[in-house]
Length: 77
Image 1 (spheres, helix red, strand yellow):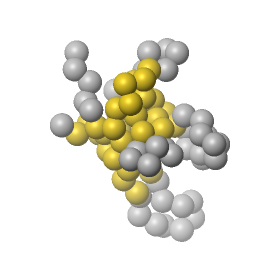
Image 2 (cartoon, one colour):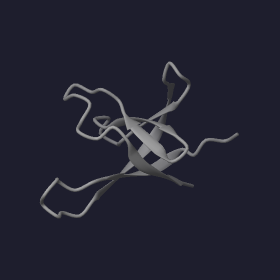
Image 3 (tube, helix red, strand yellow):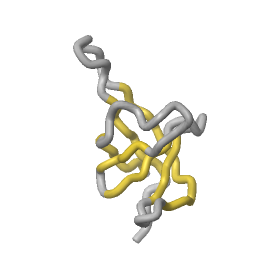
């Protein structure tokens, strides 16, 4: 099965501020997690996620795991 090379990942706005969500485009790194999920990252390499289906799980980075553990991901072709 071909995996999409890019996804659009939706990040919720700041809690309690009614801000709009942010959409981050991530590309395949060619890496996989220990459980076999493909790893994607943004252009700067600072936002990394493992994507299964339409669920993006942020991976730990130098700044920590972030406040969200489950994000919506839409494949881009």
